[in-house]
View 1: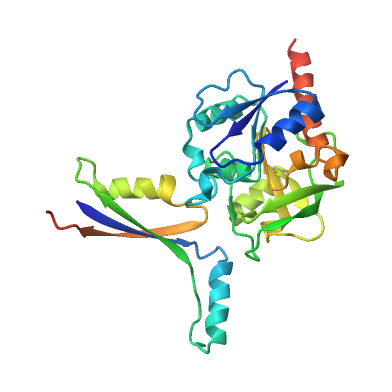
View 2 (view 1 turned 90 degrees about the horizontal axis):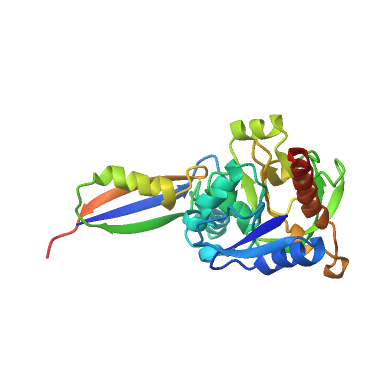
Length: 84
Length: 228
C-alpha cells in the first residue's frame, strides 16, 4: 500500500486572487518579507498494490480528473504505508 | 425541434431552461438524467446552470465523466447545437468541447445581477437573430465565471471569430478580453456564463435571451428544409 500526496496549484501564468488577498493580509500584519502567496489543494490517496505502474496511474488520474492542466500544475510524493 | 435539457445532481437552472423552450419558444423539450446513454432522438442539447456534483474538486470536473457526456460529445461531433450556460459552460470546457477554463471571479465574490452583453459575432447559429454589436441585457449568477485561456488559444479564438459575447461595460468577473461566451471552431457548441433562459419573457425582467433560442431553431429549420 502506498500513500500518494498530490499538491495542486494554479499555474504561474494564472492570477490567484485568493493568494493575493492573503498576501495583503500578511503584509498588513507586518510580515512584509512575504513576496508571494499561492493557494492550492492537497489530495491524499491510498493506493493498493496492483500490476499497473504507480507513476503512470497517478499521472493519468491527475491529468484526467484531479487537475485541469489548462489552469493548474501538480506534483506528488509517494510514501510507503507500513503493512499491518 | 426537440431539445434535451441535461440534468446532473446539483443542476438548478434546468427548470428555467425547460420553461424557456417549452413555454416561451414553443418547441419540444425533455429532461435527460446524467446517467442516460442515448441522445440520438434529440436535435439539440442544453446543459443548464447550477452546481453539478456540488462543484466538488472543480466546477464541472466530475459531471464531465457522467455517462451522458459521451453522448453530448457525439452530438457535438454530429454537428447538433450544444449550449452550455454557466455551470454548463464549465462542464463543456472540462470536457474539452470548448477551449480554456473558468476561474474564480477576480473579486472573489458571487456576482448576481443583470449585465449588458455585446454580440460580437451574429453569424453563429446561436446569434443570427441579433445584430452585430447589439447590446443585450442578460442576468448572470456565478462565482467562477472568469474565462481564462493562454495567449495562443486567445489568438485562435479571435482569428476564427469564436468570441460570441463580451461584457459590454463592466466586466463582472475579470475574464480575459471581457469574454462572456465562446463557440467551438465548428460553431455548433456555445458556452456562456450569462443566463439567456432567465431572460425569456418581459415578466422575468427581460426577454433579450429569447432570440438566442430562436436563432437555434431558425438554423435548424433552414438546414432541414435544405436537406429535404
